[in-house]
Length: 430
Ligand code: CMC
Image (tube, rainbow, N blue to C red; front, side, top):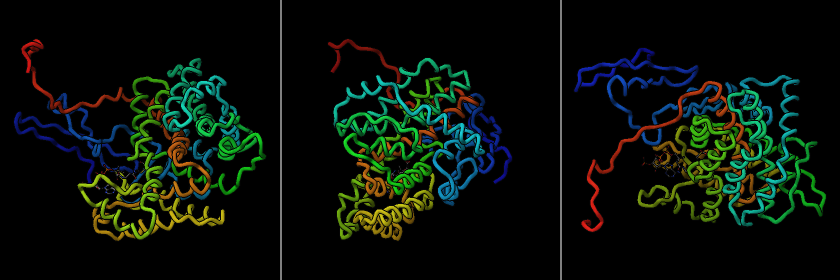
């Protein structure tokens, strides 16, 4: 495809307009349509933004056709094998891998901010014990602005970075507190001698009555899952964070909105939905029945953990997570019948014409729940795990927006309501 402008001709008025092609360092050629309303009087109609780039970004690159995912240019496979979540967080936030000194400073900053204001723990007690943890997360993270309002001058880059680090540091503390509230366990404070994922597991599972030792298998698995979930360019929750951020709203409010968007089963809520689905299928003998239901247009059932807006090939994260699920189960010496079921489902779906033609492959959520389950995470907390990791992506995009602001996000619409009509008195209606 060439970089020559595309000429649009409006047959009705006879006007023509040159639309420039914008090309990123790797991305597909993109038509810039900004001048269209002013020059020709048209808006564009693209429900679900299936054909629209909302911003330019230097953080994450996806080639959905080839199944490629890179953070700041580094292939996800290399980061998954060689890096750590905290190093990946530095990379996503700052654009480069840190040297040892930069990494030590970053780790110290993140560790320093792990505690939350004690009043926040009190605030949490207002929730009913069976509140969904994602509902609690959205509420509690939104409320952080009320606790840290002294450093919310968003025109100051240092305060923006501080807010971003605070959020990465506090998210595991808040997530664990949501779980403990549900369990009726006392608050667990962060143990800063542990690393990021160990500290999170300690806050999740330690109880005052027993000694708790973090399992190295669990800590390693979480670190990997957090790396794989850290960012995924302009997905629904990240676009939400950017859109809310574009209003000048503080980062806590922006990320709380992102958490709410992530909760949906078409997005991050799919990991919980996959486990529900596998339990509902129950046995390998019923896989065919559910594949048929997924193909039936009159049945709302979909294969959860399958399909993706961008990937029309195997999601590279799913490949890594499937192997990790095998490794974790083997290292723990466990067998999970749901793993066999998931593999059978995948095998049949990948051979089925419907899934082949529509290019529907397993996505990141298909196998992650099996790992979480093996490590003792309850289903309702699965999407919270996703939120902890994705916070890094959200704040990286929020910072990128503020470093190079675009106008407030404000799409247009095709109005389909009534045309103008006169108000009538209630006595003369009907
Ligand atoms: N099972 C059965 N059919 C499907 C599925 C599925 N999981 N996904 C898509 N299709 C069909 C869909 O019915 C449509 O068929 P047709 O063209 O005949 O109308 C076609 O494939 C295209 O689907 P779409 O809904 O138009 O595609 P989309 O890009 O708007 O949606 C998706 C992408 C991820 C929302 C969708 O594939 C889906 O609902 N998947 C299940 C939920 C899921 O696993 N979500 C996690 C996504 S990855 C992680 C994340 O984002 O958090």
